[in-house]
Length: 259
Image (cartoon, rainbow, N blue to C red):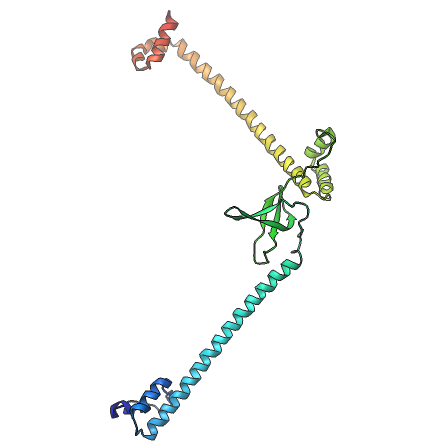
């Protein structure tokens, strides 16, 4: 290394005595020593101080990197522990699905997973988790229905008392629904609630249809009255010169009616 390069490492005469030391990399120092045999003590001291500062800086960077990795490891361990807990026991409010073995969770691309943990939701649905899901996953909402009970006995239609409880007053239906929720088949309670909602929806639709029918009747009457006024005014004769604008089919039908 030339004298100019060595002297450049020394502090300038105007530098502050308490200014922070420069940082030198080991490779840079090695090049200095290789290129310069005779280095003055002041420069050697500055080089040594720079190397010490470099070590301190790298130790600090390493310390923060270790802290970042430790934090990431803690978060990953927490995630693994959460999944492991779900595998061993049901989430709060859920039970192991033994009632609906055919209940599947869609995973996409035609693949499905077993609904392992379930809890009743509303309107004929249950919330479900797969066996490989954990607390960080959202549950799936799946529809369930009353299970068919196969027997040699014929299937009877719903009796009048059952139908009355299905669509009865709120107090009666509430007790009826509570009894249905005690059954092993949640689908019965779900279908009871679903039937009542559909019955309410149908009542609303029928009421609207009745109102629309009444409106249609009023419009039909008003239309007939308007038609009568045009006939009394003999409007076709007054506007007969406009008949050419009608389609040929209408013109031919008018001629047939005239004969």
